[in-house]
Each structure stands twice: as structure tokens, then as C-alpha cells.
Length: 236
Image (cartoon, rainbow, N blue to C red; front, side, top):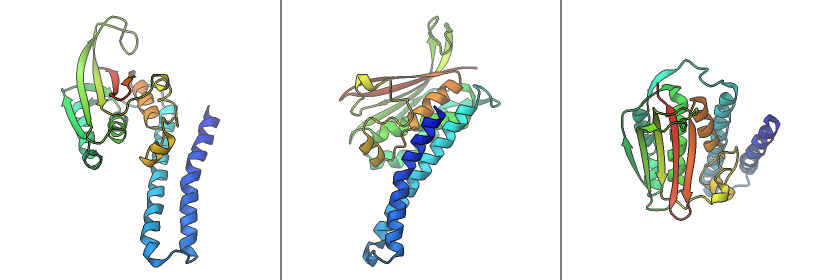
């Protein structure tokens, strides 16, 4: 599995490297008219940012692969505060995409790694914005819920758990693709995903971050209606 992952990373990095190298060579050889230099420089910048995003996600996943669940010293994490910061960071992206983001959050505290939890929520909300329709909506919910016997993240029941839900009004995901979306480098629409800046690793990070915290993630989707991701985390 590690060998396959390494091969996929190499393949994903090859395209932006080729673009950067090609444009840089043209500029170095004086083959780009002066009026086109800013455009070429912008393309090089965009490809370098794509590489940076890929490297960042690879590092996060590699770290999660090496960490045993709960290996870090846990800290109390206020999920509502984390969600508020994430939504704030994504305000411009949402405005540019003409998507409204709403947050409905109650005070919920879990024990865990705040950096990983923030990345998990960020990935879910960012995806909900990027793959939404123009004029669409995203609802981010943070709350506590009672779990029936045997339905908790670790099979327990009769307990309170922390819930993070991210609902969008995008195109939805075909039913036969739902089980695949958490796989590394899986993309529903490869060309559109790359166009929107996706690395193909965001949902894999969500899944493994949830597992690291003793939790789980579910997805429900209806084509032409939207998608809902639900993360359930133990409290305390």
C-alpha cells in the first residue's frame, strides 16, 4: 500500500513540475513576449501552489499513518470555536464561488488534537464550497447527540457524542461512488477537481483524522440535491 501511495504521489507531482519547468524554460530562453510574462509567471505560481497543497496533504496523511490512535497528549478542543475559525478562513472562497455558508453550533468539547480536528473540518467545508453550485448553500452544524445502544463510534451506546455535519447543495455523489470517495487520490471528476485545486487527499485526511480520535465519518448524498458529511466523535 505504501508503494502504491508513493507511486501516486510521484504521478500527481509530475504534472505541475512539468508545467513549471516548461514555462520557466521558455522564459529563461527569451521566448515569451514581454507582455505575456505576467501571465506565465501567474501560471507558474498557481502550479507551485498546487504542489505545495499536495505536499502539505501528503505530510498530514503520513503523520496520521504513523500515529497510533490517541498517541499525542490529548487536549480539550472546543469544536464550536474551531468551526467558527474555519468558516471565517473560508469566507473569501465562499464569496468568490457565490456560495453562502451558515454555521449552527453548540458548545461541544472533545479530547484530541486541535490541529487535526481543524484540518478535518476545513477539508469538509472547503469541499462543500468548491463543489457546490453557483448560488448554493453550505450548513455547518456542531452539536451533541445521544447514541442508541451499539451505535457509538466504538460500538458503545447510551452515551453523548460530538457531531459535526457539513451539508451542501451541490451536484451530489452517485450512489456507486460513495464508498470510494475516502480513498487516497480518488476523484469523481479528475479534470474538475484539479481545476478547483483539489489534491485528491482531503477526504482521506478526514477519515483518518476521525479514526485517530476514536470517531467515524459517514456520507449521505442525492444527485442534483446535495451531500451531507457527518463526523461522530466521542466526548471526554
